Length: 376
Ligand SMILES: [Zn+2]
Image (tube, rainbow, N blue to C red):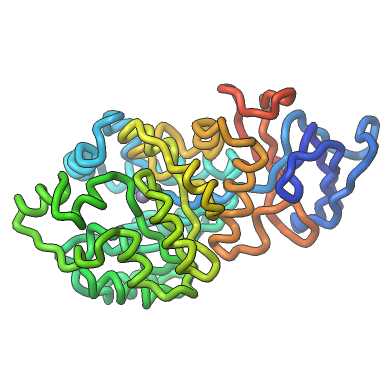
């Protein structure tokens, strides 16, 4: 039997509109988006106070790190965080890791996440993702200046549906393996990019990464590209689907370079809670909006976030109009993953239905109490 849902507002065509009824069939497919003069007293409509949105797309997560919730202090900075994660990550049992990932997965579903682009280093939590109601795409990430071949990761990805390989970043992999990894990817390439200024400085032969690499006796064969963004465009085919993560230290030139190179533009997966947690930093929203760049939202992992709540992340960007934020968290993410059935309250889609409650409906902004709850 079909069900009809309504709320004070609904996110339709990128706008928050009133008096909208969404009709869904038994399979979850939207069969009608009805606009009425008024929805008061409409029979057989389930009314939820707040804002109706489609299920959200978390464009950057590491579910396998859920066991590190609260284990690392806030505001340690980029290098401090990397050190801290190395120090604590072996202190947990397999059962603890699985339990934490399973809990985080079900909570994400309840809080309205429909799909996740998840980065993984091994396949410990793959079974949780395969069983989940959330649609996961897993990217096994290549990492390390000593990493020379992609074979092991390809083998891992081939064991699962909806899994692929991706390079960790432009500072942690040598030239050839970075290129062959991007070439072998068949779905979405995701790269941590310009989270800290140390990444650009490495290409200029200065900064904390350069010092650390020198100290360890590690050499980089890629600094000749001149900058992280230039390395990306010179290493990846323009027709590929690319998500760049963080970008806190990206300039407008970096943004333009990526946008001009990739046929459909790169999508920037912004993770404001992680940036706040690690460095009290903020994603480059003003630069990206001015540049007309595509923006999605990710939660990053519980190692660097208090929660995997998409709403907690949007709340940190509350100077941006809510309709735009919600479009980033839904439609843009679905587009980046080429999951055309998700991301919009539109006829023919099967995006899940979520309500955001306790919103300031007068000013259309999130409050400290706002939260997303799945209703379908
Ligand atoms: Zn990450």
